[in-house]
Image (tube, rainbow, N blue to C red; front, side):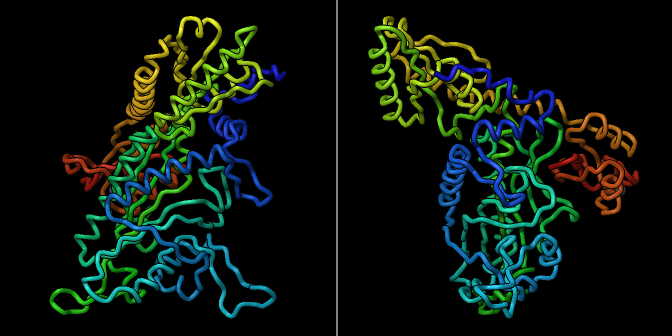
Length: 482
Ligand SMILES: [Zn+2]
């Protein structure tokens, strides 16, 4: 029998080194592994099950708002990618190219999609003729390749999974409304399912998507005080429709260029989820997105062994019937203590223990992953108590993350205070900004922090730009970022 229950000693403490803890947890909890291809990871079943839950919930939200899924080719001919000048300039350094097919050198090289605007727009120009064809609301679930120099599992990998929405509208206002609707879906999803509080807002010109008129994003703060961009929604205006000739006849029988949006989230969300909630013992997964919401561990000893096992099976069946995702860990080859450590490492929100005394008293023990508090519950009350506990854990994780963000957001005035706060405290630094590229770059060069998001605040005009001292146009959050 495997007796080593010192799992926890094998992982770096989160409080000591987040970066090492992050890798340890991913490997030990079997979320992902490095592959023979540098910068490319293998997503193992436990990690992929989290992705399936992310995908399932987002897909439902997209469909509820009228979007439909489609699939476009992996390769994009060079000539198509080059059509929108800003777009190709922005992506050129990260594109992987196919130059040989079979044994033949290709006449035109093919990009492996770094994003699909070019291929999708080339099709939209064929499909869209009239205002009656609009709006066109399409989403694609796919893999993407960007040739990254520095990679980290889930957060930045050469190949990653994502969804990309590409919509077409008959007016600027409609496209803007769509861009904001999706931003709101992303915010709701991040907060309600991942239990990660996010700040929605606009990107600066420096940070926006190559080819977009405007990029909106949701930004979260990680435990090391660095910001993480969790999703983006772009108003492309007519930039791509002009490059790809997507035109339609409007209601007044005039031909005009269409208005477009694109938006996406990636497997990076799993990286955020890992970092935001775990502790020194491993992962903590929010119940809404945990592959297993509970693990049932029978403590089967002596002559009651069979009773305990059959009781545990009954509980498992009951939870399954009530759509609570559970795992019955009745493996004989591991001690209960070993199992406790393993499932804590894997971040399952609630552990259900059942031993000889519990069978006698017709009770169960529920253990909360966040604080390890034990709750003794009569078998008849299991469902009510468990559902309540899962809800509480979901709320507590969100609240913890939100408190952390609030305690690590500082308002500053002036360049010295701005750069010093970034160096000493990290976190989100709130300040006024005049809107000039030059001022933003000056901060980047000094302390390698950028404007993560422009937030709407009524009193922005009363502030001064932290860099040049001129009257501020916006309130912004600076931070170092992933
Ligand atoms: Zn300025």
